[in-house]
Structure formats: C-alpha cells, structure tokens
Image 1: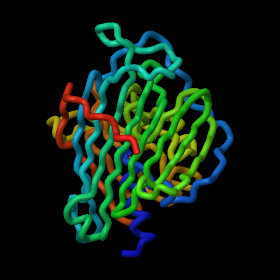
Image 2 (image 1 turned 60 degrees about the vertical axis):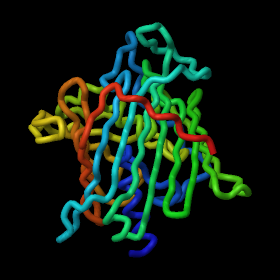
Image 3 (image 1 turned 90 degrees about the vertical axis):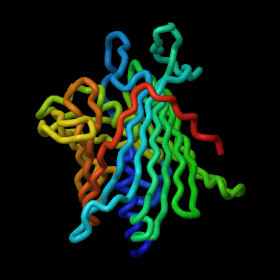
Length: 311
C-alpha cells in the first residue's frame, strides 16, 4: 500500500476519534494547512439559563473497538478507542460564569480521547499509530477553551496545542523529537461557541436530537474553523453493549469539498435516545472501505486519567 493511500485511510478513522471520536484528520497529512485563518465563522448561540450537570458528569469512560470491512475482508479489528470525561479545577483564564460541583468548587470539564492501531491492521497496512487528545471545556456554555494533541505514526511524532480566547484560535504544533524544530503556527477567528473534534461529540450529547432536525456546529481542527452541518435522521432499536436500546442516527457532514475531509464519504453516529445520549456506534464509509466503531464498555464515575504530559 502506498504512503498516500495510508494517509487517506488513517485520516478519516482518526477523525472519528473523536473522534473523532476521532479521532481526527492527521494534521497536515490529509490536506495542506494554510498559514492564515478563514473569515470569521458564525457558531451556534450560547445557551442561556442555569448551569446543569451533563449526563457524563462527574466522570465517565467509554471503550470502543474499530473494525474494517472491504470486499471479502469482513470486520477485522483495527483499532481501540477510549474516551473519558471528568471534572478538574477551573482554569484561571476562563472568564465565563463557572460551573460548580456539590461542594461549591468551580470546575472545567476535561475530555480525553485515545486511539491506537492494533493487531491485523498494523500488519496489513504496515502502519502503527496512536493519537491522544485532551480538551478543556467550560461546562455552562459548553465551549472548548484548550486542546492538546499527541500524534504518533511509526517513528513520526507531533504535539500540538490550541487555545481559544476572545474569538481567536491559536494552533501551535512541533516535533518533540527534534529540538531544532521551530514548529508551525496557524490562527483563525470565530464567533460564539466553538468546539474541537472531541468536544463536538460531547456537545451533541447535550442536544435534543429530534428526528428531522438540522443544525450547525463550528469546529476547529489544526488551526482552521469549519462550519459542520449536522442532520438527525432516524430512530431505531439496536442491540448494543447496553442491551437493546432505542438509538438516534446523527450524520455530521465532515466529507466533501471545503469540509474537514475533502474526499467523498459518509459519517454516521448512533446515540441512545435517553437523556444519557451515549454514542453506541459509528460508521465511516469511503472509497477505502467501511469502518465500524462499536461500544464495548461504559464505566461511570471511574478514576479520571492524568493530563497529557508536557513536551
């Protein structure tokens, strides 16, 4: 398999990491990054009213497996996904009205995602990868304030940090294995709420998700801001790790010209239709094949993981 094909394959899978769940398109590999941000993008208005506890608070851990199918190759395990949500002491520079826990202490939400290749995939495509992402979110407005990402592909490694403040996005990336690397820097602007790829999934869990509803989310990745249309399409009873549940299908439009992934494809996520809105499965279909990401385990109020180490 050529290097270009590997990049085309890995990008969409990591986007769901978040994903992506996904996790994410690999910065600078799926498409060339521009050194200047686009014009301001209008985002969804800030929600009003008192702060509320989200269904993934005070902590939650979700574990998934990703499978690949193409022609005679059926549902081969290719990657493990792990996502956590937890509370942590409020960042000093957050100016919005803080949320408080039962003790009255102000806090932020810390979301983490970890995806890594496994088994047959690494041998078949000769590509090993691991991507970790950490998002700090202000709970009341559900706006991301900081994103940190570690991307490892074989011997290649990249570390990036994004901050969101006063309508500006600042993304900085460097090679932790190269002390002389000056790094790359990209800036952009936004209006209203903003999400990164990981927080966008949790943001969807806070929404009503009514069948037939269409809305947009402003999502930042690698220093660029995209307006992502989201469609709520259908409800179905499904067999899941939680038992048989009613689930709602949501299609974020991340594929296509001018979008996060410029090639053709489709991305669907199924959330439980109860107030927990747990993502029980996701599917990516493109010219490479079909990727199914399936929930294996849910841990409520588990011990939070430590922050990503500084590099």
